[in-house]
Image (cartoon, rainbow, N blue to C red):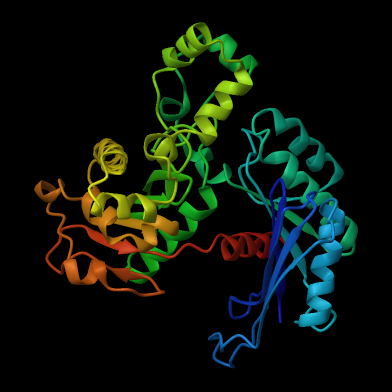
Length: 407
């Protein structure tokens, strides 16, 4: 059995999954939250897997919230190991052959899964300036994992790597070229692991050759992005220099006239940190309607709440604008997929996003769209000229696949 441990380390959290790669199913997974605070929440699930690879009902699902302090990621790793030892699966019986790590920003340096060495650690640290909210946490997780699992290879899988196929016309901003080069200012794109996974799953579901397909993938969660994919390669994506650009998100503004930032600094006297907080944590759906969860927004729409209705309309308007632009860049589209929390669960968002694209022959089947399912499914009619799918994303599995392919 080939087992890979996947680590997704956030600034105050540690998410992990132990995956049997022979059958591509998780044996155990968990989440440790509020690292560094007084109270840390610990959730760990151990799963029994049938011989056919299907997950049997969970034999244990334990959630702990304790007063003990988990001071840092090293201690969080010790807690993770304790969870496996106490609740299973026991790691000595399922030893990982490698550890895969999610790293948000690889800059222009990393375009493939990369074996972690001291030099790679240093490079990830140097890229912190491009992702100050993400890369430091990712690096802390890598260091803690290398200390805990020092006898197996560690692989970094970068969110930005999938978008390294963008052409200069797609990733270049029209500002002073020398200044941009000095400060590494360009579009990098994010959610690449999810976009890659979903586009490949969509091709497999349809029984089509990935190389022949023009695809749009909408990753719609609290963070949201859309990517145009041609022949399995990213050719355009909505997130840019940071994950702030593009679509309207839960708390992020998405696209904004750059002069607004200058205006805020001049008129409101905001510092750069205050502007950053405004655009990343007080904007998007939350800024428009006071609520960042799409479920709350939709409830407000049903209740004729004006702020929620406007927020939803702005959200959909931006989705349609990007869809139209990217279909034009692709010269047409064969498959459109929705994924992540909102994309997988909101039938109304999916239907409204594509409601104006009937002129392209896109037809949504209402019954299929509103049906609930945990797996990949088609929501377009049989007569639709474009296959529209819901594809549950699995970034942990994609990281594990890329990790195993390298080692």
